[in-house]
Every structure is written in structure tokens, then in C-alpha cells.
Image (cartoon, rainbow, N blue to C red; front, side):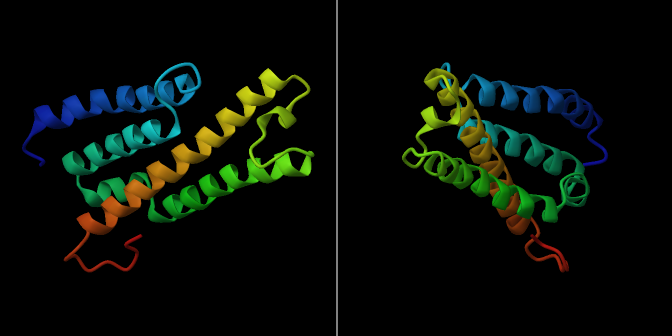
Length: 144
């Protein structure tokens, strides 16, 4: 892909916009369509675009496989930890009202934390799957 200068320049211009749009979808999720799953897919698609244009090894240098493993596990821990925290505060699992004095504020905090956990898990999981499938046939020590 080194000879495709236009693709490389356009993708460098689009990459920050794609990742910014993923954050917009993430934080707009409790007001309209969107949320953690959609934002995670958009974020992963941005990194996959980078890998397709600049190469798999360049993408692995930007987002290392060990970071993805931490992202998957910390996303699940955020989701489950929020539910456990609400139970420890005397509510049901994922009863966001328990997270703040005001129920509405607790709902907002709970949804943001849980959706961020979903974003981490989905983006990291999709990138891990991409790294594994894109690296097939290549002998690598650290595939994912």
C-alpha cells in the first residue's frame, strides 16, 4: 500500500474523525440511538481501516495485543463491577438508582460506566479477532 499516497493521506485525515465520532456515539447513547456497542464497533473499524492502509504490523504497533487483552477484561469488570457495586449499596444488580443520592443522577452515572465497559469489550474483542484472522499464515509469536 505504500504506492497509494492518496489513500494514506485520506485515511490519516479520516482517522481522528472516525474515533471522535465513536466517542460521540458513546456519550450520546443515553439520549438517542447509540451507546457502547455501536461506539466499540466504530472505534474498531477505525483501527481496522488503519491496518488495511498501513499494514497489520503498524496497527499492532499502535494498538498492541496485550492492550486488547486488558481492554476486554477491564470492560467486563466495569460492567460486572457496576452491578456488584449496586448490590453492595443495597439495590438489585445494575440498579443504578443506588449510585447517587438522586436517582436520575445515579441512572446517568450507571449507564455511562456500563456503556464504557461495553465499548472497551466490543472494540478490544473485534480488534483481537481481526488481528488473529489477518495474521493467519504469518508466523508470529504474539498473535493476540
